[in-house]
Length: 265
Image (cartoon, rainbow, N blue to C red):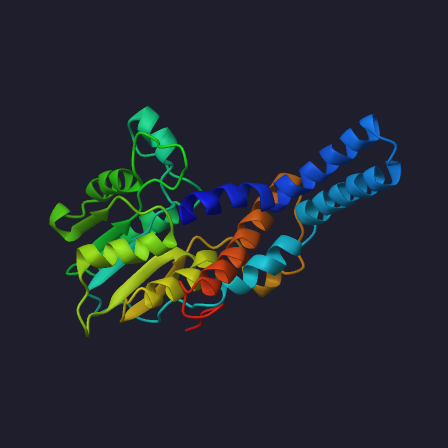
């Protein structure tokens, strides 16, 4: 139930959708009622919001603290396993086209291949099923497994968890399969903006010995805090991602699925 509520709620409170809805409601009220003051307020709020979120540095202000929360480890050695979270495989296109299609978070997969070479004795755990409401014809694990084989990673080293639909299920279902032991060390690979929530959730689910390995950075860091966007779609997309992540941090903490609101190293 949580999965469906979160997906439906995310659609309606996503900033870009919400601002467009404000404009549309304002136009409808203008056309069919005499409440022009309210209609004008809604329309202008939506338009100004779209301009600010689409062109200003606001999206970078939101996402940069998330990306810089967990640094990469200085040395890659002595790890027993690599856990990579789903999100890099487009399950809808993959299911239809018959070959692995990647999303903008493709680095979760490609950099895992590099880490697998640096850690030849470590197992590679990919956790991700179908993160969409309407079932597709492929799972993320299926697409990732195909790429890992193409990268030359031995199938004996790969563990594919193919039922999880969100970060909490990533943590709990992969833990059941892998059964991590005390003293083992694990690299956790996901997008940098998603790392704080992932670390909090995995630790809450009982994982120990975790070290964050953030990938898929969207900003250069502090230098981008004053940088705007040359296209509204770029700014709105990044603003939506950052807003969703901050909201996810708050919700997971509130319902007891994370160690704290804003996990830290």
